[in-house]
Length: 449
Image (cartoon, rainbow, N blue to C red; front, side, top):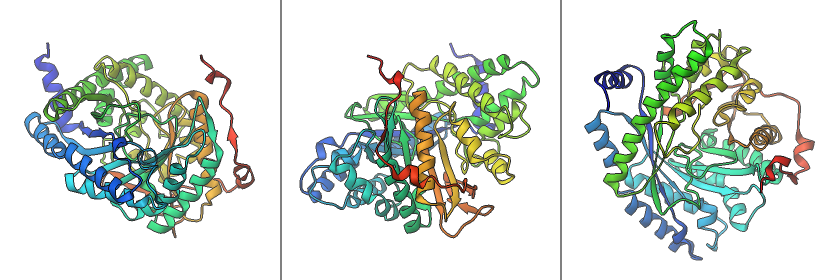
């Protein structure tokens, strides 16, 4: 039974601690939209999305109003376009991105993910055409997000793809002033039910259509930890765990209600703590509340490991449908505390890389100088993919080379994407290493059968 005290705690979290449902994401399979005629394929995709998601935004708004729970974003993810549209006789896959953008605008969602390819072990024709089209696709659309999975624990790392994605990111940045790169993620061990952008896609093992929910609440966790200042870290972990339980229960409620009203199966609740640029809604603030002078100080990785584990333990008891990424995000541009630490030089890309060993998801929303080379970007991607491959976890890179900008300057992406300081990149070149291409073999522990 829910007690009056629990109800009042939830009201306080909603009113004063930035608790919200970050996204309701409808996953839609477009595998049945395949056609060798690209126009027919586009028409099928548009019709299917606009029919399946016609009530998504209104339903989210109704739940917000009736339950008093903020739902920040309503989104869509689709089958990776490289799979769904591979049979189309065209080299220009950007036409599919523009169709997705038009459908997203028609139904009123904030973003649509799935302009994606899964190339951890090699390329098909559709994969190559999609990757070649990414710069134009993201530069000529507003709401479409793209992701490419270049490695996995079972397959190893496709270094041809890593090289290609470094070049793709540079081209996309030059075509868009960097903005296109804020909508592009490179993964290792990508998951099929991620509700968060820019990495969401509707995996081939998913049902025809489903509802996935991503909750938030860094501000709630930070506030809860104020009550246990100076106490042992096991007390900190228990406090985070109990708080994550309450946050997840709210997400479960919203997911079940949206599923019922839309007549679509409930997929998962993602437990990830997703920060925003708002003051008081920061993962960095949580780590500093644990006793760090600043995020980036020695001990930061240990504190983040504690947080990530406690969030998972608390959340998994609150829902039988936990999935997605489920952890703590550390996007620099979307977290006021991370921005503060990066601007003051207390947080470096190298320290962020170490932190990604123990959290979700990786090097996220990091702006770098416009003269950063494609090989340097590929090196960053390779390092993150290696962490994911060896540790059997999802890692990702969303790095944004900003043309004309240098270290110490800032770039404003607007909205939830926030403002990022331009961070320095190690000047030593990995060009010869990246040029070798080929494949980094899977680790020994991938042999589990």
